[in-house]
Image 1 (cartoon, rainbow, N blue to C red):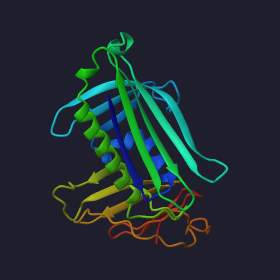
Image 2: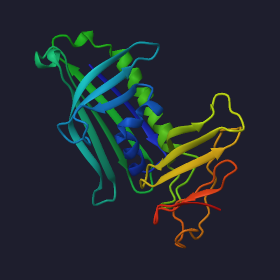
Image 3: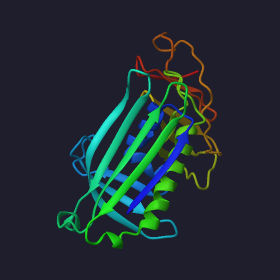
Length: 253
C-alpha cells in the first residue's frame, strides 16, 4: 500500500526548501498538514519528535507523532543538480507492535535551469495496514503538493530591500488603539513583516480609518538618524516611517 504525489514548481530549490521547513507557517498554505510542532521546542534535526495536525479533505482531522529520520539541506552534485530530502516515520503503540508502519519521504530536485521537482511517497506495512485510509492520504499528498507549489511560486507581493527576494510576509499585528473590524479615524495599528529569505525585519505603522496596509516598494535613501543607506524601510498609512537596521532607530520622513 502506497500513497505518492509529484509536482513541478517554478521556483528555486532553496525557496521550496524554506517553505517545507518553516513548520510554524504550514497553516497558511497547507490544506493537508495544518501544522507541525517540534515537541522539544528546538530547531528540527534528525531524531526530533514532531506533532502533525492532519486535516482530511471533506472534514475530519487527526494528530500523529512522527520522528525525523532524514533531513538533508539542498546540495549540488558534480553535474550541478541540487537535491534535498526530508523524511519522518510514524510512531506510537501500533507502530511499536508492527500493526501499522509508515515513513513519509519528501524530496526536491532541481537540474540547472529547470524547475524544482517535488516528490513524496509513503508505503504502509503491518498487520493492520488495510485500516489506513489510503484514499484520504493520497488526496492529502496531492493537496500538499499543490499548496507547496502555490506558496513557493507566489510567496509575496512585497520584496525585501536587503536581499531583493519577493518573500516578505506578515508575521503579526498589534492594535494600539481602535478596532480593525470597525475602523475609525483613531485606528492605530502596527503590522510586523519578515523576509523568509534573509530574515530581515520590517514593520508597517498606520493611523487612519482604513487599516488595509500595503507595503510599498521601499526606496533606498540615507537614514535620517545615522545617515547610512537604509536597508530596511517602508511606508504605512498617512505616516511615512522608516526603520534602520544599522542604528535600530525609527524616523519619520
